[in-house]
Amino acid sequence: MNKNNPIGMVDSGVGGLTVIKEAQKQLPNEQFIFIGDTARMPYGPRTTDEVIAYTLQMANYLVAKKQIKMLVIACNTATARALTVLQKKLTIPVIGVIQPGAQAAQLATKNKIVGIIATEGTVNSKAYEAQIHQYDTDTVVVSQGEPEFVQLVEANKYQDQATRELVMNHLAPFKAVGIDTLILGCTHFPLLESFIKAAVGQEVTLIDSGRETVYAIKQCLDKLALNTDTRHDHDDDVYYTTSDSDDETFQVIATNWLARSHELDVRHLKIVENGISQHLEEISMPRLILASNNQHKITEIEAILNDLGIDLPVVPLRDLGDKVPEIIEDGTTFEENATKKVMTIAKIAPNDYILADDSGLSIDALHGEPGVYSARYAGDHDDQANNDKVLRKLADVVSREAQFNSVLVLIGPNKPKLVATGKVHGLITQQRHGDNGFGYDPIFLVPQFDKTFAELTADEKNQISHRGLALQELGKQLPAWLKGV
Ligand SMILES: O=c1nc[nH]c2c1ncn2[C@H]1C[C@H](O)[C@@H](COP(=O)(O)OP(=O)(O)OP(=O)(O)O)O1
Ligand SMILES: [Mg+2]
Image (cartoon, rainbow, N blue to C red):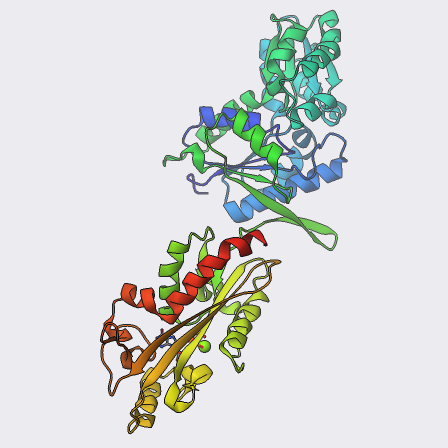
């Protein structure tokens, strides 16, 4: 196990953020990856089988995809019901929030009357009682389920006056019993700490199960020599939620509670049903795939895309690996072929944006030839043979007018196709000049520079080329298209 791998933390929703906050404070160099199961919260009313299944899905994701070195179950309900199962199934250390809290309470109590507030699931499991009675059978344990507290925190109402009154009312019985220690047996409850203290009395010791858990994490890292020796910034920490939409409440609570000045890196996992089993998969950010096998084109397009302010990761076709199907360019127009390119790639990348260019040289004296057949005029993608054929056909021809055409087609998830074209006039030379570029560049003369495309720098070519002009045109149409206008 690599000690520089991250620590995984799983929770039913937002409560575990109190644990990660403490962990970030006490373990400044460790990297944390947190999953809040916001799609299925709260866990309190769930069956034990459900809680075990959900917790395992999150654990399996973190082990398989993030190579975590340790798992923390930052949720009391999940600890009560799933900890022992996960400890058996996983080969990494798994730490729960109950044992550390119970131990701290046992050390803190003097009158041996300990209160517990938790979800109903945790209360019914009697996990805290069992743990406390392992240390001392005489300790009196008074527990109370407080599912409403969980809901108030999850609804971001943990600072409201009405919440304060509700907490005061609910916790009044603890005063009558005379507890001297109260376990906050749900990771949501530290957010209500000041209200809880006011309700039970300042003299009562509150045990934050999350904080105690972080001591246990530290001890475990020390014992197994798993402390990282590289420095992470907690801005590297990643927070996943399982709701597929924008999880605004999570983002707001997390940013406030963790007191970060900028937005946290919150990503989404989707729950994938597979027959009777389920697993989690990251919902990937859409990419812009450049559907071309021609590296020269890709380089030109990438250089110009930079200036168009496209906020998507740009991925060349070759990065999609060997699953890319063959693209058959048998259309009779550039637009038809460019459309075939994007549609073929859309089959394997339905959630991405895809951009293709189909282009070619059209010579007036040859009635537009080679046109859509430019790439295979003489030999398939044999630039030398293609150039030779053009020069041979024009050997005795005086009129050497020609155009390069580029047709760009862009598609995106749930978007109509966007077409942009560019055209540049030139003259076919008598022989090749220059080594830059590709294709017919050495025989395409731009009168304004008195140079062929192959004699221009990449920047100079991009300023005036058919592809450069088509990309500029695309850039103009893009904002409205992205907005769906
Ligand atoms: O700026 C250019 N400078 C020189 N030649 C060019 C240019 N632009 C297109 N051409 C020629 C090369 C090729 O013979 C044909 C494009 O064929 P075309 O199918 O669009 O591209 P391709 O097969 O090289 O790559 P892909 O289809 O994977 O994007 O026109
Ligand atoms: Mg092609």
